[in-house]
Length: 321
Image 1: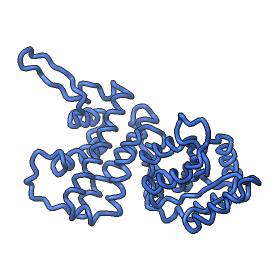
Image 2 (image 1 turned 180 degrees about the vertical axis):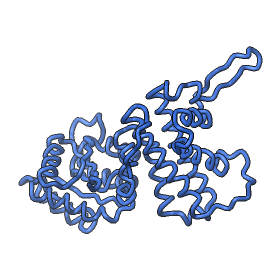
Image 3 (image 1 turned 90 degrees about the horizontal axis):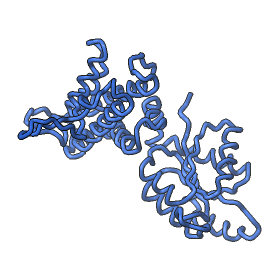
Image 4 (image 1 turned 30 degrees about the horizontal axis):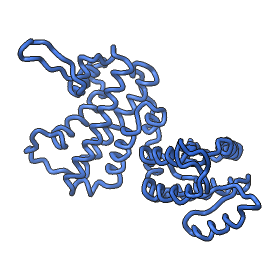
């Protein structure tokens, strides 16, 4: 089944969100709607997870933040500015209820944003038109294409096994691996930055495993320890011991099992070629294949991690493709 589209609705009326979801369900449009009641909430969502969305729906009047006691006419202008900044290129529409008193205002807004942000009314027929308008345009979105290609991997984030920071890092990793390979091979700073993103995702995975099951990955193997030179006592830090953690995970499987090797691939290349490299005089020239190797190893490790979170031991074979 095709991955569902995901729209962000910024509207102070929760009943409208319920209605919109019902219209979507009744018409088999395969869309998930996330709801932000205030502009502040919408901006925070876009700032952390904008690659999730293939459409944004905003009301003309709305609540600016959680302290707002009534809707504000500046809401529309501020919301459009936020979408331009935080979600450039994502199809954005205006949806509002029509009353006798507001017809002139709506007509003015339609004229003002003609060709940029279409205006739809909150009635049944126009809601369907609005949904279809967005879905017709989402097919050209890079984020939508990447998430569709790797739907089973991005489920890790949609199920909230990892947070928005890791999700953003992983999206950037896949975007660069598949759409910007040439840039990575020619731009050392970008290459190192994306290796850092891959390492950040790996770290988030290991921390989550330890947090979920300390028997599977105990703290003494997950975190680095420091020995006090005077007292000889050992203190556990909050820094992840990648080698120790991945080594311990490998001990949970048959020696031929590749899971820990996927993790080691990410860690080793990031350590020898990335911003964390202590020395990088190996003389190896980055090619267009170097970073995709890291990205796909990370994707495989994420698939295993998803199985771990779903089964509790991660030893069942995953059937994700």
